[in-house]
Amino acid sequence: MKKKGLFLMMTFLLLFASACSSSGGSGDSGGTSGDGQVTLRIAWWGSDKRHEYTQQVIDLYKQKNPNVKIDVEYAAFDDYWKKLAPQAAANQLPDIIQMDVSYISQYAQNGQLEDLGSYVGSAIQTGDVAESVLQTGVIQGKQYGIPTGVNVLSYQYVPEKLKEAGIEIPENWTFEQYSELAKQAGSKDIYFDSSMAADIFFNYYLRTKGLSLYNAEGTALGYDDDKLFADFFGTLADTMQAKGAPSPEIINQSKGILEESQIVKGKQIGEWQWSNQYVALQSVVDKPMALAPMFGPDMEKGIYMQPTMYWSIAASSKVKEEAAKFIDFYTNDPEANKLIKGERGVPISAKIKEAVASELNEPTKQVFDFVAEMEPKASPMSPPPPVGSPEVIATLADYVEQVNFGQMTPEDAAAKFRSEANSILSQNQ
Figure (cartoon, rainbow, N blue to C red):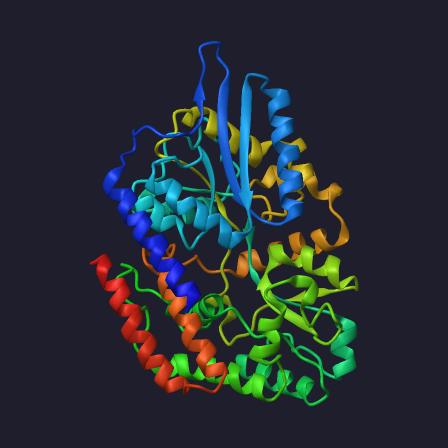
């Protein structure tokens, strides 16, 4: 329940921030000195590899803009949000903030983020960016984020291990076929996967049925039939019991460390995750890998292009124009993107995708090709998760864990989750 407590604390801090700050307030963000020197603060989360190339991109920007000084702040994902929430409460957010789809609505509606509408098409060039991609950063009619790139859900696997299990992935597979394949792999002491991130893949499953995790207003869950919850998470728990996926104890032992995962240890066929995570996984698996589309039926309804993350500008920033220029540089500069190589998702600019194609290694090229294959099949993305969604996600994870440990039936978990989630979301009415 620790995670849930953390999200409650962060929600309180953000609500407090919305009450004691304004879009033009003072803060410890960057500024312009009397001699024309501009100081920007930029914050992001990620791996050491992300920190390294982002610093190289920043150095390149400073070479081309010698009047700009850039201070950086970065951390692992959980630590990043722990640090950002009190900065928001103190009205001291960095000028440029890497923003996640789970949090952007909350920060935007609390008045912490600048509407970028006036910069799009001027300081931030988006002429060759698909409108559907740009729209993913729009909340209540305002552009609060520019996607760093797009990705798509996939099953990422080791063909050699699949062959060892004696199974094949059908061209248009279903959720039921997935479960059967996973159990077949388990019967040979090979894990098919390490289960699925609860909120992401349950939302996908709901989308295949024309529904979603949240309603359009963000005031309640987006589905009425708890059998959907019970069927989905009951199937995943059954798969675990049949050793198609590691037990919760084994999964928890790895503590999210990629090098400790069962696929890296050679005991697992693949992972369900976002396409931008493929390159990092393949590098530690160190064997040829492949990507398979999501299960159906009605995969086309479920699949969508999601921003890997966004660049946003703090409403309190004193150097918004320079911040917008940096976002444009990150988005549209070919030299910068040859350093980035799509690590924050496949570039949103068509020209940049073409410009970096020859620079890509084989795993990255696989990702670009896979996203290009899925893009015409994809449906529009659901609206960004509403305020309170981090707490809903933590609640969902708690109940799913209890189902996986056999401490609660999927049916009981479905009812309890509905009650708690709707109570949280009702505050948006």
